[in-house]
Image 1: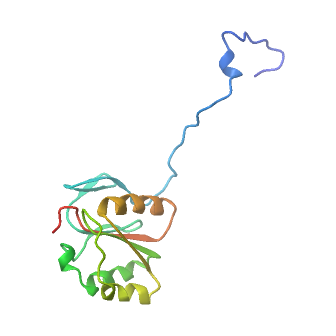
Image 2: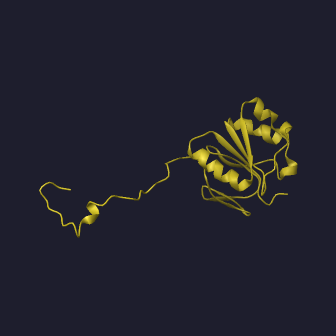
Image 3: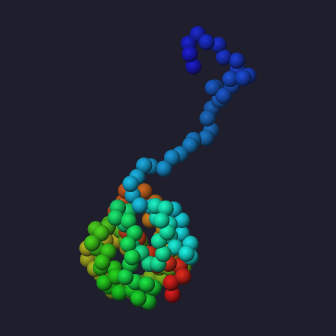
Length: 146
C-alpha cells in the first residue's frame, strides 16, 4: 500500500483481507525420491525401477541381491553397510514380514537401525526421511514378490 493513496474497499478488499491459505513448496533437494509405486515398480526421479532394489537418497537406485523374501540372506543385509546409513527401511513386500534377527546382525553391529514395513509404507517413509536429509537406505522387495 502506498502512502497518500486512497483505496476503494469494495473493489480492493483483497488487500485488507486476512489470508487463510498458504502455498507450500517442497524443499529444494538433490536427493533421490520416489514419485510413485505400484505392482509394476517404483518411479524414482522419473524413472521406473522394477524388481528388488536398494535406494540410497544420495547414490540412487541399485538392484538388490534378494529377489524375494525367501531369498534373504545375511549377505543381502550386510551389503547395505557400505552405504553408511543411520537407518535401513526394509520393505518386505505386499504384507509386513519380519526377517529373522540373525540376518540383521551385521547392521546391528555397525549401529545401523532397521525398520521393517510393507513396501508401500516403506516407500512413503523413505521419502519423508530422505527429505529431512537423513542418511537412510530403502531395501525394497516388490509387492508381488513371493
